Length: 613
Image (tube, rainbow, N blue to C red):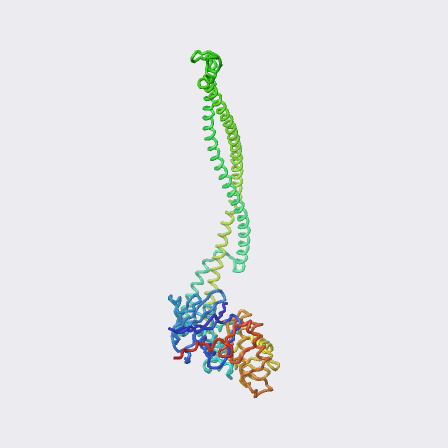
């Protein structure tokens, strides 16, 4: 179940500076002088939650639109936008602080309508996850869907209702609404909807009752003919349980085999991929070897030709000193460099080319031998892959053979389960027809008396204990023994009804009622919007022994101190307190505090001061 947190309240107007207040997700305190717009904040929040009107004050002149930011406990952020005096509320699915420039995500009426979703009440109930919950409308027992306004009256409490003599449960002061308001409180305390009340058959149903029974008998006979297994429902359920158990075992076994088969297929893909890589590499090596063998033959041919040139030169005497074979000059008549160009250079060239070609030939032989080694390694790897693939195929065949009987068993068990479920469905249909026949044959029971005060005693005791703990934490004088009368909706403390107490005690008890309800329902996962707005909860409280305190706006210090401390130390969700007196200084670092028109405050009120000519 979701909860809501108020994020901000912002007023906008053409040519007007925004008037806004940012709410803490825990405690927010707005205090200060009268007529500064403190209570107007509470009234504006209520207006944005579907109240019909917002009474104007002089300070709001020129402001035409109100924005209320909301945060949902599931993480969503919403902004409600309503014109001052408008009948529709626009919803934006984000945090909006200025005049919208884009169309709204939803446009809703402010009035609740049980048959339409397009109103703020149904929208907020849907956000909270409680739309459609039922409450009593009147003592006749008519049941109606819950309205968000029924919740708002319990969590947004103005200063008049705070000290009113009527019970906090009865918020509208309209006697005709008492049944509904008590039923709402019953729903919050117990979490239980009002049941739909049985109705007597109509005249048409009575007129055709006998004919319906005959038709139902015929349908029962037809369904009984569909039964093929001689067993009752209990036996069929036992058989179905055994089939389900067997099916689970077979499925588990098949799942194990399937997992093993998947791993084998993955291994097979790896082997095939590796074999493909090897095959590609073998092709590359064979291609290189073929080219290198041709190059080897070329080198060997070149060496043979160089050897032939050397042998021919030796035979012809080109490489010997003495009489020049070219010109016939004797050695002593030859120029010192006579043979350099003709003989020595030729011999040197042949020798150098021979060495170069021999070195290249040797390097090529090494490369050829390395490639031949790689080819042999690749062939061995391919042979290993082929062996592993063959083994993998054999394992897959073995798994497939093991899977065949499991598949057959699964098919048979599924068919058996289907037959049993069909038989049980037919039995259930026959039971429904027989129940319908019995309802038509017997007189309808008298509708039970509608009791909005029929709250479980355990829930009442739990709520009484929660209020007692709250009053004790605030150190309100007395034993603070709390009782709640569901018939009158009256709360009594120490044996005295709240309506008989003074204004200050009525306010304290009402505040404890609202805080305890939020605290209890939030802790127990029961229905509650998630926030509480209290206007003047402790302003008029005084010590019992000081009935004529000199400054009545200064309430008993210890109660006020403990009131704020408890709201901070034991949070019930979000609480917004509106008061006149200055709260304790100790809360300023832990709560959002807004002083209006007090010494040292930055704000004169909720609205910025108007320009004066």
